[in-house]
Length: 285
Ligand code: PLP
Image (cartoon, rainbow, N blue to C red; front, side, top):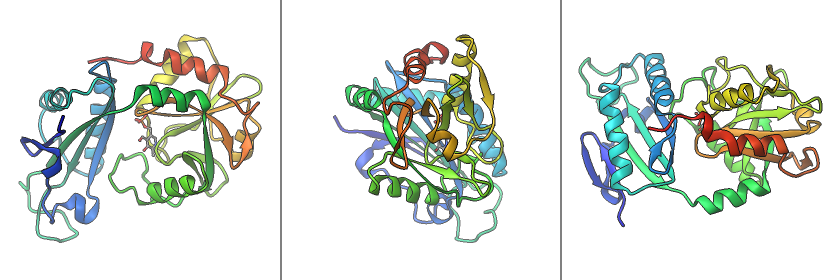
């Protein structure tokens, strides 16, 4: 089956789906995006993703390109046309096409909107999660606004490749004070030996993850103790459990940090429970 992409009002064969060379997303990374999990052909936590999109756009001094109800129809239609049951749907909005000039284009310049959807191999994802992943740590060299879900991801992709090169699947950024900010494409968590679940507060230094919000709800429902505070890599290495969250992988156990096993070097029981219970706390649309 050939894939279909939504591009500026049209559903096109994915292979030939194009954006203009002077799109500001291409020229300047002047745009934002969202990635939502698709499960049983439903979007997971669409409302929260679209609220974050609205916020990211506002931070770039952009409005919504169309009402959220219309965006929602496009997301669902792209999933339907690609026959995705389990996977992701991707939405990108840029400031549009204009003669290359750093300052904003003339008022009325149409934003560019792209939506794609992709199935993932559910069984393979479960095998990865059952084994857990390794992470490396490296200096956080990003700009001061990682809370905006901008398509400007150069530090993130370099970090992810460094992880790959080291035989790991994720890289945790470390801030100037020695604290973990977040992963290259995920939020970072630990469970201390006392059973405290710890994650960094969602300030400007991290993306306020949607999966993070779901896990916070799951932790409250389980009656567990959550502390939102920064933690160091050393503390994470000495923790009982560690994990990352992201829409595309929900709750992913971390079993090694910089080559050092976390806990007994296997996915933690609390992490595994949070992964299993995740969708009970998520919204399906
Ligand atoms: N942090 C970064 C840098 C990310 O890129 C992502 C997701 O891609 C996350 C955190 C997790 O966010 P979410 O749970 O909304 O997918």
